[in-house]
Length: 209
Image (tube, rainbow, N blue to C red; front, side):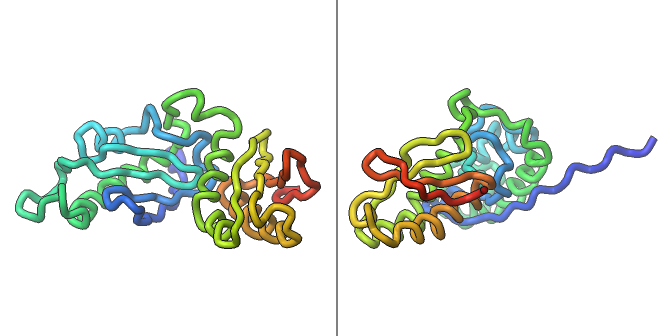
């Protein structure tokens, strides 16, 4: 009998975050069907939580956040204090976390959401839009005197309201289409974005056709 084919390896890329104890591991969009803190993670990754190497794991639309535990048992006892030197913490912890994460990503269906709310239809798209609004695209809107907020998610369609200087602006199509539309599509392939002003949806839509 021939051996079963190996599961495909999911590519991950580490990024620093505002919290030096937390690393964002970028994963392909659509890897998970939920967001938030998982109730169950597979094998070695769970072991790192159990022994205190990690204090938290959270799922984003296209990333996994891992936070180092204060008493990291993998730190070198003769090295710098891992409770204050975060570079030393991730110097020793990065390799084991990466290996455990890659193994855990072999079958993302083994991950379980902390609650049914995290896995509701639209939860991932809503989280993606909120992430985009809080990030560079939202900052671009705010720099022009406007603001953006998620109004609702229905299926694969996210409705966003632009207020302030962006409301009624002739360039809002370019703003939403080239920035929000592409950013949402990158995190949630197949999703669409529509614009709403004063509670009235406009005939402007970007994304999958």
